[in-house]
Length: 169
Image 1 (cartoon, helix red, strand yellow):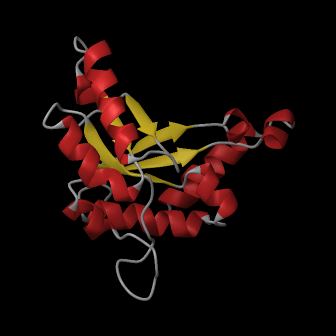
Image 2 (image 1 turned 60 degrees about the horizontal axis):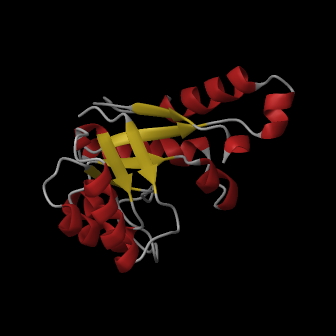
Image 3 (image 1 turned 45 degrees about the horizontal axis):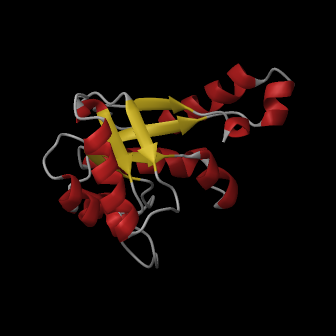
């Protein structure tokens, strides 16, 4: 699987939104090969969006997974759960998760291992803040994020690295 465009729907969407999006997509992009497109809707809409788009080739993924596979983690979603939903990829280490949920590179590394264990394509998100960019620290920040996230991996099968500078969000 080779994804070229991944749409992270973040904390957006509804049943009506999904229906309208699919209708507009198929009306306006009927000549596009959707196999290179991935959508990461909110977890509660994964099944619905899958039904709405059918078997058109668009890949469905998760916005995040837990760094643990099971246990007392109220509200979390495991790699095996998203596999059960048919997800093909998972965003890992998104800047909003790093900032708002204080995710560390060590936690991100555990998540990468978890999705790898279920043959889910990990999409490692990296990016620098506006301040880091102003200080010309971009390469050092990206290198640290990537190296620490990949440090403890066991036989990684695949990986996509998505660069999204925090200041551009």
